[in-house]
Image (cartoon, rainbow, N blue to C red; front, side, top):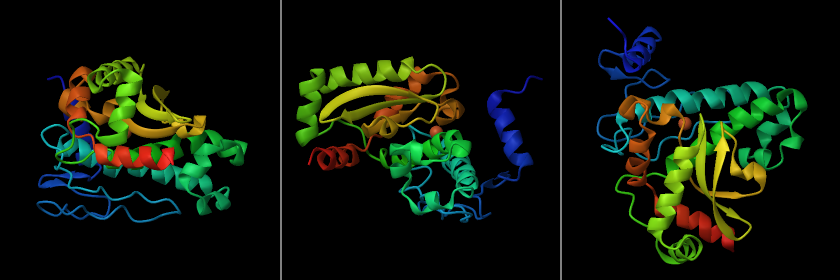
Length: 248
Ligand SMILES: [Fe+2]
């Protein structure tokens, strides 16, 4: 019998002790609290920490499923942080800095670990934003100054959605599509892998993770299904706050 990719992932997790017959466990071996409370972030092993999800794993259902959120946060994000911590152990002063400040100028990072910090640090920074860029009951359209700026730049929110979706669909392989501020001007950008617009001098406002790990369990290869679903959970309040702060 052919094993589907979903089954294969589950088998791997069972073998690794992550998925039990009674459900997922977080990295500290505790079952998620029923109904809502977000479990604590994985045990610290270095200066950088995985931030807790600001909502329950299942809070974005039916658009983003609990299983994807659990693996994405507890396994993928945790792995970026673990590898980032391992790298900065070779240059401990980096552990005293904010990850955003490191990524803004990667020339501060010793060449021996620069690629690792770019990839793993980018993964940590991008995902830390990503959890906050979503919320239960999100979606809709931006309001206030950001709404005016979006309309001014793209024509309408609908036009923005069309362009943003096209850019997200067009990311070849793994990467992100972003609404950014480039200077004081809105733009839509792509980044490959875990590169962040902040390393190119831009301010990321909204970003969609189009790595397959963000949608494969629910949507398999259908990125075209994931993107409109994801737009239903966008936290425009958070995006607007970032916009206002960057414009002042
Ligand atoms: Fe991701």
